[in-house]
Picture 1 (cartoon, helix red, strand yellow):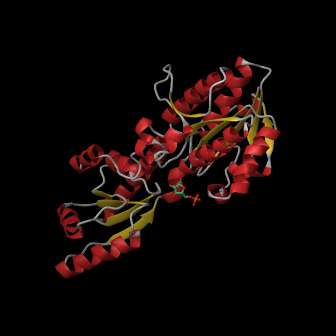
Picture 2: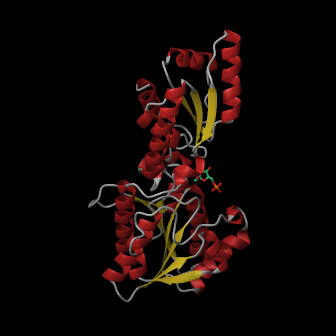
Picture 3: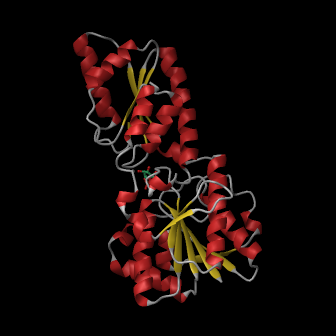
Length: 335
Ligand code: F6P
């Protein structure tokens, strides 16, 4: 068989572990297989840019951040039919039996669209998708996306650094977390570090109450703002400063954006192992001639959950726009 691997969307730690496991499992289980990397994600699929991969070059990559294959954004895949058809035809013309994709929401949607074209035209390639994103917004009622726990690790470390200086200066820090429209990364990092408050996307914040909470705090206060919230960290700073001025209270407030630092660096062990197990399971399914699908699976040694790509893109299957109330209660209870 001939396989291709694509890492799509924002890079997430664990993608390289996924690549290693697809390459090594494929070549070890069936040495006549050839495995190709799609260079620069969906851009490479549009431009037919493929590179043959071997077992040796997979050494030492599993724990590293980023992606050795690259991932350029290709926004035209969202609604440009020529680009979508181009990808389906490039995969077919290059005789790929399976395309293994690891990526976020955008990659899942692109895979589903291309797969529809493949099916309707009777083309060759099947597409198997795993969730790789620090946002944890990919069909996440079925598990956690690869890279999410690595990004929480980084966030926790940064939040503890900020605690040191916040506490030394008795300051309030307003800290932005990535996560697109999903509050997961901000919330889980906030729970881990014990932040004073985590503002989630769409939340109607009671700033007077937040100001009371800050007042009660002895030395440091850290307010985490999820990327999808409609006010910037600077807006939040100004609102709080106005309340403190009105009350005649003096609190120094600083802002900081954790942003791209959350996405980089080495992968958490969970992400390395989950990505590897999932990729290995997906390769075995491919050798059994499975249909296209979305794979999640976190219990190593147990078969992954498989959904059709149509089911996986259905937002009904995902809590990513609304954090479950249990998680919100959990975060509030630990403040
Ligand atoms: O999807 C991952 C992510 O890091 C989001 O959290 C963030 O909104 C986005 O990618 C940033 O994308 P870019 O790297 O294109 O600026």
